[in-house]
Length: 282
Image 1 (cartoon, rainbow, N blue to C red):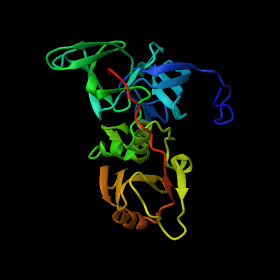
Image 2: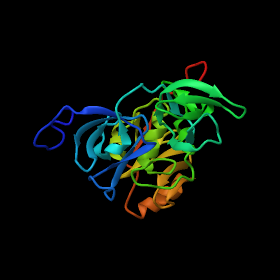
Image 3: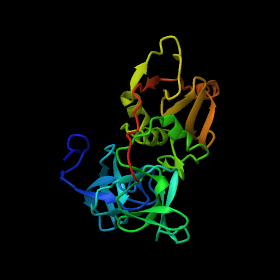
Image 4: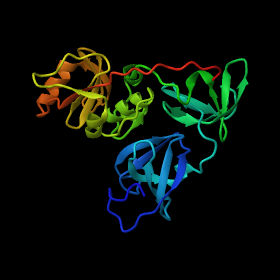
């Protein structure tokens, strides 16, 4: 019922919760593999299904950021064991057995959530056994609830990743997807789109006399674009000019965008740093 009053429809239903079983699942603007990609749901993410068509496409809402769109039913499963860990490496393999030589079942992206049911070890590595099946090396997982402190450091992991409108993984991502996943890994919820991020992330810094003094971790916004400061002069952003996640002087970015009639619309700063809690085992 959360969509009532927000979208137009002849009727509204409560919907049923499902979980993304695929490594990542494209959320599209229309029920077609050729439709525009709006965002991606990652493994372990909860989605609420409102409608399932005979052709297997579902109208859904993502639980984390409330995004709505079309997702293929084959990417979903019924809720089972709640996730206990998430992937903390840029990408990792879920092997078919606790053996690095066994065939990988999937390549799980940063932020994917899994339920760990046990451990195993061989001469090469120690593994977490995950539901419904598979094994992931333990150094690529962290417990749900652990939060990193440096979202800029998370974003830096994506340097060189190709630009993809609507993407959220190292296989391809866009500017707001980079910001969202970087903040999520630090325990900070963020909307998916730049306009919503500019309204919701941290606090606004004044722009009366141009850009304020910037620091690592600040977010600089333009209409339809956002980047993260690596230091007071250097911007990190997924962008269509480089078609990759790139690092460059902020002054260079500003000059290029000014030629397109775009000037910074806002700067946001998140002042709280979240300490990583101690934990034992995985």
